[in-house]
Image 1: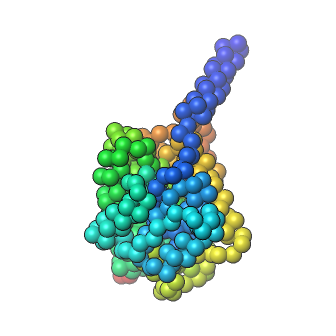
Image 2: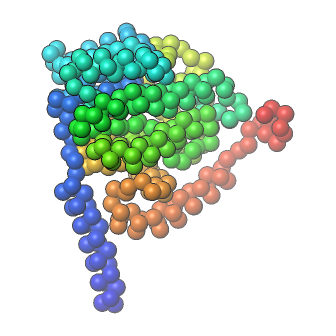
Image 3: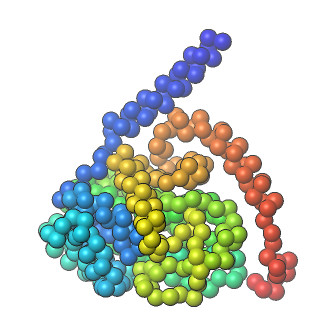
Length: 346
């Protein structure tokens, strides 16, 4: 009995010490005077994150394909930080290497310093649907915006970041659905998973240059998006701001659009942005906004750093059981599509 109590005390003590160590070694969120390069501020989540940065005194650069939208975001940020806030905007296609390189160079010149932080929040969503029913052109567009744009931007900004020898940071905004891969998200899951793979590789390489990497997984996961996708609305994104797409309707949970401008939605995005900033303050690599996102992140963590290694290893046993039971329940509730059972429609 005594040995059991000793083991319990050792486990609890290890968890507490791990948590205290993370607090003591946390990098904090000091961005005053730093040059932060943003994409995706045309959507409310990206804009909410940018507002958190300018409130802390960051020098912000916004890039994207539509100047009108960039100017609107610039105006919103200046309302938060004052008219004298340093906000640079540049119109460019995120997948065009030459345009992005020019954007980075002009942003660095405007602020008088190399990029310190990059926040890649550009996102292209596709209406949930069975994979064989999706438009390949839309899937390619999602890959361009969600993944390839990040590759182009970081490749353009990194040389100056490394040469400056400042403590840099790269933040990728992904989705909690890239941790569970719900039914109906096959068209987008590849691009969001690619972002995670890129982040994992960069995290290891950029340790050499004192540049940290983080991945943000906002949203609440839904096992079957097709249950609620009848009223889905495809968002206006980096490549189609303000335009109606062929995918119309309302929205689901983790697959959420970033176009809802209602006060309730704005408050929700602000809360998500705050969660991200808190995670960055603590130096976390994987940051989630909901409890099931946290559990999914623990299960699919791989070799990525854990937020509290001892505590998470203890939780893994219970989380694994929970996930297994949840998976079985959800699988039994799935219904095959009307035309399923033949290969004629594939």
